[in-house]
Length: 249
Image 1 (cartoon, rainbow, N blue to C red):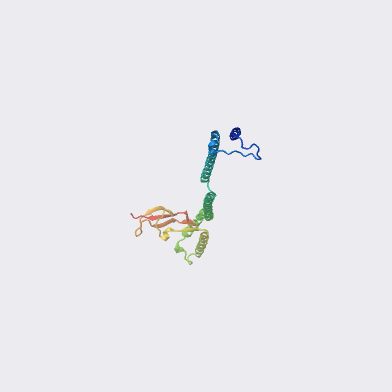
Image 2 (tube, one colour):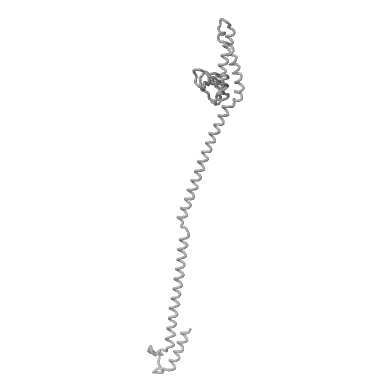
């Protein structure tokens, strides 16, 4: 609007100062003037308007470039801070692998614990079977001892058929009964042992020393007499044997 008002004042001044050479002309021609005769106010105003426009454009371009640079910087910063999709997939894969390793370890531990439980249960069941007759066997060994004492009361010289055939028959019957009974007990894990017959050394785990006495020609600690025979139930001592031990010194 400033430029339009300046142009209007310029046109009014021109029309009042200069007249055309012919008054009647079909077309009115606009006079031309040298650049030096253009009013100073018009030239300054037009130049000021042009400079202002260019400055505004430059300022606009500068602000636009700055905003674009800031947006690019913000996008680059966000891209740097935000993990990419590949990194997220790698992290998820590592997490799943750790979970798989953990679950596999727990599975193997559970299998091992279950197998240990099976073995322990199997051993306990077998031990219960092996020693289920322990109390009955303890009561039974007393009868076996009495049968052994009955056989030992008869001297060997009286066991001739000519002297007393009835005694020999009775002795043989008792002996057969004892053998059958011991074989039956052995099938169920109950065995009798006599340390003096085998000539074993004294073992406090299976023997009970009743007395000690010197015995020429025998080593110290050797069992030379059995006062009461011992019994083993499936490899475990049911009753220790009462023995006499050699002690020369």
